[in-house]
Length: 63
Image (cartoon, rainbow, N blue to C red; front, top):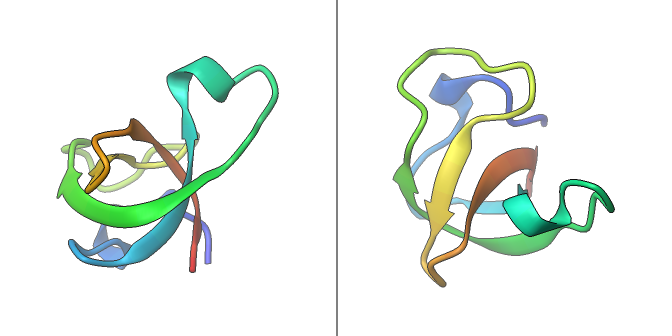
């Protein structure tokens, strides 16, 4: 599943995100969602979340 729709993402879910520093390379970081930061229902680049580890980025895959 992709991470462009807010209603498919829940707190505590395992996801793969792209951190701001990794946007050029596309490297994915895997973690557990702590907070959902995007307020809109849809975002073409992925919903922005904060992971339990503190990393902030856009969801590319829901695992």
